[in-house]
Amino acid sequence: MSLVTFGETALRFAPPDGQRFETAREASIRVDGTASGVAATAGRLGADARWLSKVPDTPLGRRVVAELHEFGLETDVVWTDPDTGRQGLTFHEDADPPRAERLLQDRGNTAMATLTPGELPMGEIQNADVVFTSGATLSLSETAADTTGALLRAAAGTRAFDLDFHPGLWDAGDAHDALADLLPAVDTLFAAEEQVSAVFDTTGSPREVVHTLATEYDLTRVILTRSEYGAVAYHDGVIHEQDAIETTAVDESGQHEAFIGATLQQLAAGADTDEALLHGVAAAALARTLSGPLTPLEPAEVERLVNSQQSRRP
Figure 1 (cartoon, rainbow, N blue to C red):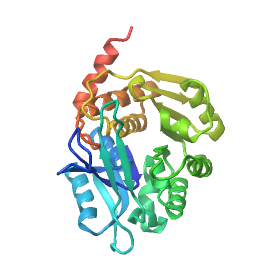
Figure 2 (figure 1 turned 180 degrees about the horizontal axis):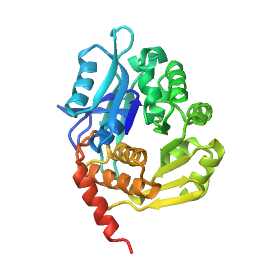
Figure 3 (figure 1 turned 135 degrees about the vertical axis):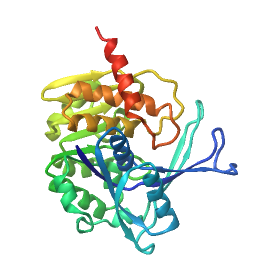
């Protein structure tokens, strides 16, 4: 199974737990990107996965690609002059209630915002079993949005897309308008429940929401992630539900990408929707026990968790 993803990967800066940036003396640096995170998970679970992007040839840009290579992810990068575009950054302050976490986006004028279809290996995209990208890529610029649409329409395999809505990148109205144009070129839509309510004018239960989205945008499959409540999917007129697997969370930042990567890997390998969702929630549960957005899952531990859940079914 071959998976090609494309999108921007930011460098994420985070102060130690319990500290704010205005007083912290140090911060960790990790890569953070939906497209690269999905590819990394799928690759670790057996897919032939590759991440495509446009990156500035600067120390920060090289830092992103080096960490992805250390993780074992294959990349195909367009290196660009620093004057053409910069490296995207995010600043994340974790927090426990009642204090809210903060995510600050510094993604203006990045290299990925200037990406055009002619800069990417179209043969890889056309021949891949699955092509994936997300709304974060769409939000970077009009050029990036046009490129996203062109690449999805060129793909012969399954075209998968994650809503990936961040208010710090664009507003809900702009996101809704852009997605109305793009979703006809998408087969499988992933979305976090809280993001759907922010972008789409949908009401009702999660089961009703996935049905509404699939019908309105003619999608083959819609998969809604619900954090501690698991996932709900619509496919071929049938609603599928999968409970989350209870874990003690260390870091939740990589769970969504882990879910998507594992689910896509299973679907492309021929699994049915229920089996794919179970692998997705298992990968997400394990990702919550690991620190950072990029989580080093092991196939054997995912399968053990899947098997343990299956053994509990009546």
